[in-house]
Length: 311
Image (cartoon, rainbow, N blue to C red):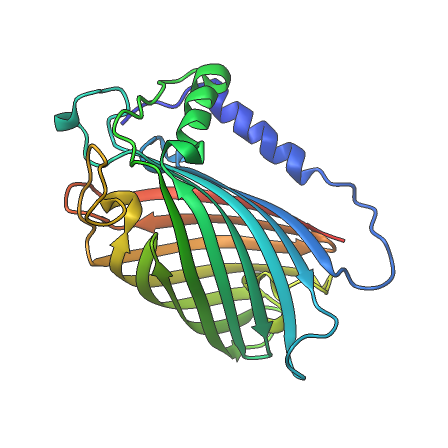
């Protein structure tokens, strides 16, 4: 386990403080119809720098005044993401000493969602690039070399360049076990993906404890259009059946990547988080645990920090 440079930790902590220091004055009038959000995934606080090393997500959401259906709230979202995956040993240039290939991915997602009082559906299309053309490896090397001053990953076995297209869908139903102010809700969820990047099916169960809005107004499902206060705790458990993971095994039988591994078909995940909506500001902080994605690697854990500003 590699020690984390203190400057690295302080730099990211400073960024979080800046993002959270939003002016307290709020407009009084119509509920917001738009939102910009930023999310960062990283395992730095947990004193590791491996596997799913870092992720950045920039998202715009728009609530529709008139959608396809007569009942329910509909939203559009557009997202840019960049993710970097590294082996446990980021200093070596010997294949025998690494346990997974380097992999970078950058992509654009567009999606539509329909939220009702007890059900939710979200469909998305994803296109993007994996490999050196994604820029994820180059950015991580620059960041390690010039900002945080820790070991610079070699990225010598990066998955080769590939273009990817995926279709993804999320569905959820939930029930209220206890009302606010300390509410208890239980949700049964399922998600799936099919395409060149990922193929999987993932059932999930989630529990929510605290002051939370109804499904069609809650930050639990990234719903905007309301400023009702929420502050709650979430616990979730997921099982994923994996048919394909191109960031581990490459892009099909003709892939010429220097090093690839086969993903496990059965992967378990669990996590918990704290979520807060204050007027037009959404704050999310969560811990994620991911079981072994392949027989060559071990389990992994990371933190997610997110801030959204509605307008």
